[in-house]
Amino acid sequence: MEKLQKITFVLIILLFASCKKNENDIEFNRNVLAEILPSIIDSTCIDARIFSNPPPRYGKPIFNKDGHYVKTDSTKATPEEVKNLKEWKQQVSDVEKDTFKVIIAFDPKILPYEKEYEKIIDKNFPKVTLQKIKTDKVKEYILNFKNIKLNRKFKLKNINEFDKKNIFERKYEFNFSGILRVSGIKFDKKRENGILDVGFTCGRLCGYGNKVFIKKVRNKWKIIKMKETWIS
Image 1: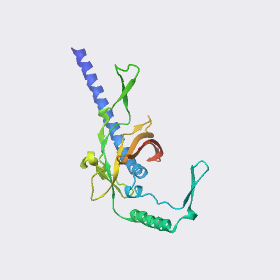
Image 2: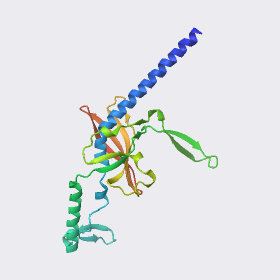
Image 3: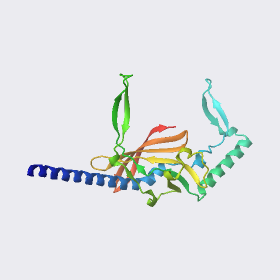
Image 4: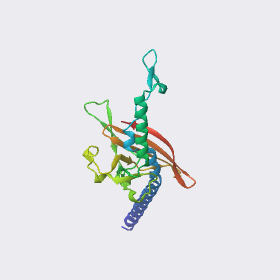
């Protein structure tokens, strides 16, 4: 009986230690993400008013013998094209100078970067192996983003305040530009380097994702590299 009590006590201690470590890991993850988020937003998010207003044609396109485009000769721009380009530059300048906030829908529920895979064999196709993503829910957490000071005129708004099914069809009284999602951060053993996934959706068929590499430099977290993972 005494032996059983000792084993139970040890198991309780181990369980408590494991929970405490997980709490510390999540808190560290949350703090680093809060620090690096402004840089991620600056590197990822766009103002839809500029993105959806590409520069007008300016000059005569030149093609090679095979009919492939080579370049555009801007010296042969028509008076109408000169006028259109001037107006476009003014429009872009007006948007860049205005003081209106660019609203980004943000999902504060942060899922871990680590993904476990469960292999599923379909009985009808025994040679085909499917993969189902399983997320470790113990490592999920909510990021309180409202107190994070952003660098530019972007402003985050909780995605749960939007009509998710029709988020891009709705008309808003503010300048809505898209949806930002980020994963939790996976660190190395020394907690000096990290990696996370970032995705920005600017429309039903508009968006892109990046794998973001971060590093601690002079006690501050910096983005070292971004690698594109998907585009729509």
